[in-house]
Length: 333
Image (tube, rainbow, N blue to C red; front, side, top):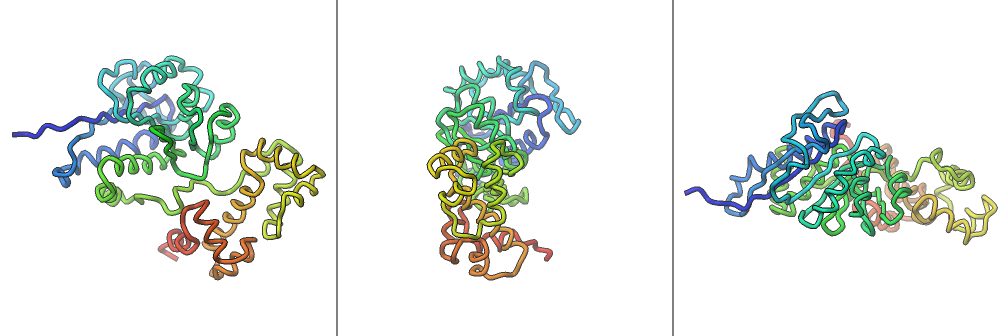
């Protein structure tokens, strides 16, 4: 007699012109899990059913690479309970405004969905629906400033490949959708099965570095405030010095209190954390590109000593300098 299982519907909701991998990546993770569930049949009391659904009205979804996907239909036609909703990225962040029906649908259905996820700029959909208010989220690093500016009530953090806050999951973009899918799989099925699927797909179950997608502080050229741009450009050449807020404020002729306030307001990070990230980012480059010892790297990057560098790496990347070096040095070197 065939065993009856709980069904968990995984819905990947895709707007037109989304990146193909944002749709196909998570889909492949869950479909591979479906294919391999028999290996752990005695442990898992449910089965996934995956759906690719159009965020528009027509079934055919054109993607940014030119390939089109035939979805099962529009989100308006969903007539089954959604366990996990994954929104794929928008081609442009402002395009969410053209789909007010989807925004209203998200508001109405959010309370009935166990997990709500976004990949890349799809976070703008969730933010507009009010689902990210007060939440710590991530998006693609190139969209982070825009998301923070448009939705100041959202706590934007780009130091992770993906973030979880309550039942809201947000991923940085492109391949990070697969990282997120593996994490969801681990929540449901346990680490050993998620690792089994990751191995089948030749993926990390967890990327080294606490899922860090982009640790380099903001590009100085993208900073609108001239004084802040000036001090950030100066920091690129002086990050290994003993730096205090008073020193930075004096460089741009501002009071320390006003400088700290303006810096945090415009860059969404404190001066101290900005400097820590800049130092860790440069230490990462030394770890990958040189054979210098950890003590030498710590000294060159203003991290003082190995112990302090280790603390900063754990705080920002959730890995140690030694682990980072081992993980990222090419196998072919």
